[in-house]
Amino acid sequence: MPFQQRGRTASKLETATVQRELARIAALRAVHTAFERFRSQERQWREWQIELTQIPAPPFGEQDRAKWVEERFRAAGLTDVRTDEIGNVSGVRAGSDPTGQFLVISAHIDTVFPEGTNTKVRREGERLIGPGISDNSAGVTGMIAIADAINHAGVRTSAPLLFVANVGEEGEGDLRGMRHLFAQPQMRERIGSVLVMDGAGTDTIIAEGLGSRRFEVIVDGPGGHSWSDFGMPNPIVILSRVVDRFSQTSLPATPKTTANVGVIRGGTSVNSIPERASMRVDIRSASSGEIDRLERELRKAVAISIEQLAGSNGGQHGVSAEIKVIGDRPAAELPKEARILEVVKAVDAHLQNSARVQRASTDANIPLSLGVEAVALGAGGTGGGAHTLHEWYEPAGRDLALKRILLSVLTLAGAE
Image (cartoon, rainbow, N blue to C red; front, side, top):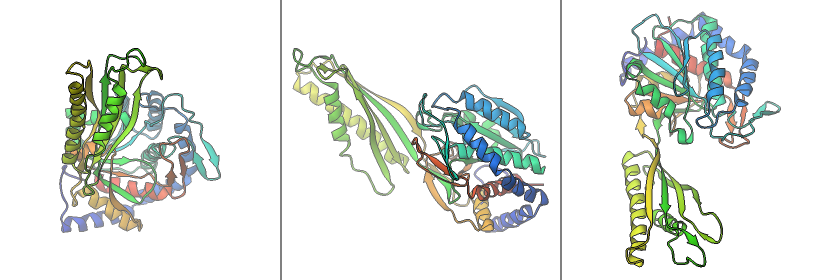
């Protein structure tokens, strides 16, 4: 039976019902046809993954990849294929219930790598090496493989399926693609649950959204010459004091909470007092309360550092500070008895796959924070070196992940 409403939890009786429904679906001839498609087309998936990786997709520059995905969606038999105003590509596989809520299958198409990065993929035996080859070319390729196999096998579902290749998951994209999807009131009400395909592997179920908040702290001053204007306030020195004070903030081990100063910029030459200095700070926690507390501590560190400067200069220092929020990912958790989690666990048991529920920052953060059931799963194979130029992927075991995701999709959407 397909999901009926968001936030619905599963009782023990419903768990048994899920297991029976899964067994029925797994025995369907069309499902076995789809499984065979995963095996027979592995070479094609590999070539598409390479082709996709070599199309640059820096933050806010995903247009060329979007066009490539559009073509693959149409070839996989999806209808109403379109690219929206911010670059998300979507396609529909209709269900037999025209009023049913969508099950969304998504994968992000952006990478962390800036414009100009060499995206050429090289092979070392079965290993593919290239920036973004696993995160998230593996996920996008897997999503297309799912759509292709459903179309090839002629599988029908009760609930409609909405495939979304979204932008803006990485870095300063701040989940903008998924945010945009849920910012549309009509679409938001039609989405029943979300299955995100992100990276490689089959050993995790991301059902807990790791919260993060990112800031840019900017300090401006009058500037001057290092000799003739010596004594003028130095924004770099002020920022250093902010870093020193903020770094002494206590961090709890439970819930795990982290704070990192990842970027510092400022100055024009060694013999100039800079007019501006800035830093970027990343705060992460499983607790929204801890993130709020650390934001207050950061703002306090900036205010005290400026006040101390005013006190030492008779109140006249010509320095100003600004704190900008440049990213905000909500922390959220899926209820332990949520139907989507029951289904994925039942599928893992059926396939004898071992997986742990874990916390991470993915596109699933957005639906989870809105009370919509969501998980993020790996697209199979193995990978490593994420977010480096030496990122790698090996496809062995990809078909297990594709079976896992297909059975989850068909159980959630109600295979007929």
